[in-house]
Length: 252
Image 1 (cartoon, rainbow, N blue to C red):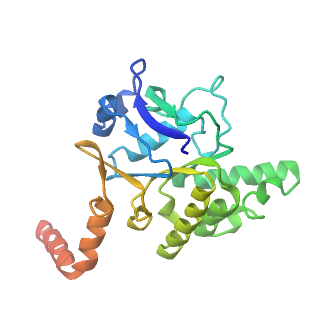
Image 2: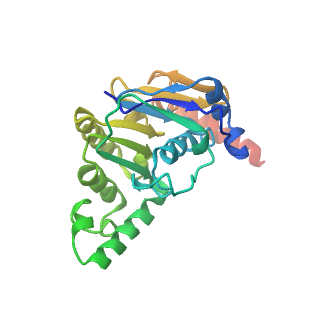
């Protein structure tokens, strides 16, 4: 049973002007998004609005701008995303998730620094315990991401991940799929913005592609990350020749 089943655009609120100009946000006004009970992927080119949409959901659900656990009290804290105030999140069940996490790859360094500060103030290992027992700054970027997935994310929760593949090798991305599958079997729901064709291959997931036409559900094979990667792998020399020849022509 999912915790969230629909994202709607509110009739009573407006997104910020710079957000409203994104075609996917405009499409959301008249076409709500139905979420998959287990995994919903958001894909699209840079600027398509996938991170904007994920951040809006995170803001509305109560996560902090930097990411981390769902600790914000909506009664006393102002929304931080341009889209969040305009969204309505429909719950699928009256039960509340026991856990939750919002991962922003670009601000994960700040989260790691904050954990170090908490650890020094409390003089205990309580914060490090949730991330594998040591500072995330003492681990490689990929190791720190995996420490999060293996130790902090515990299941029975809603997890919003913005480009989790950013620090993961292809092999680690496959390992992440295994970990995600375990968490799904433990009553978890994921909404993930990604460019990774590997992650998109998770069986049964819903893939929403954001582009100039709005928001459309596509299959794995129809998604841009898969199509472009497949074209490159099956015709590397031909594609590179076309790309590099065009580049040389423009430089003359």
